[in-house]
Length: 368
Image (cartoon, rainbow, N blue to C red; front, side, top):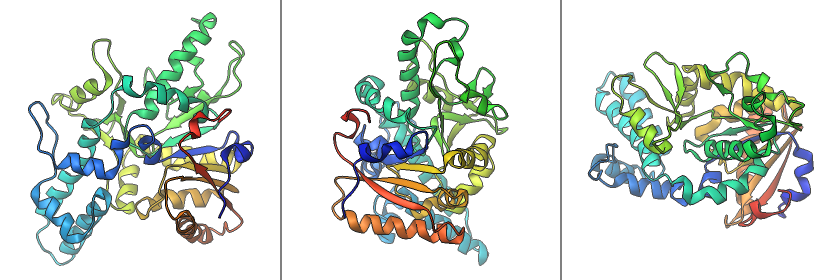
């Protein structure tokens, strides 16, 4: 099967919705691969590290259940074991404890192996133009790369729009995450789409994090806050300090559950995540019925998102396939099968699904 070239089909998806998976992040920093995360998580914390690590019990359990380095699969097995034990009125405390420990190890390890901004700034620059083609971007990864792209674009536009300051200073950015001085704009997030005549703007791209991210934290009362870098601290250090602040007791907002039903429950229990999932994602897809998927495996663990997408009835979907996948035809058929199962349920069989290749030079192409 011949894969399309993105440059040949991108005109169809102008101002469409973009969903970014972990593959987007791996293209910048390959330590975000599950194999690398697992190996790092097995290492006992060194002096100064406070993260949870994979215990011998969890590692041996993974080997026995043959879950490999897949955190989500092992989390799902633990979740299933908990449900079974509850059904037969057996002890669940140890299972729950290991479930939490594994989830925490995953999130903390992502932070520990995270690249420094200076090491990836050039790669981030090459991704800006791609993101700005779309009306709305949803990033499913927990890392800081997309958030850094937003901030980098803002700094570039500070110079480009400098003559518009100060009147339009806080309104001139073309990549926006809809956070203002008073937090996330739950009721007014659509106002961030408004373009201003001075400076002359063509369009805005809004960016959201449906599964949370390292820079988002939740308080004990459920309030979501965004961690912002201070002048004397890098963002990763600021995030660590925020997590360790026992007085305010804030914890990472990352949906890392191993079952799609559990993920959905976690989303529905949080105001920010639920707004993105129930309101913003459907409105974005309904805007022009076009969707692009980049670096997202669309596995069984994300059935809640696939169902939501299917219920919106997109007319055109373009899915990126990495050039290093050996059996691309089998991968495409597998994806089609997973999607069609949900789309038929919602009577959206008319949806056209096509595939494009993600090569090594994808972001170096002109007019990407």
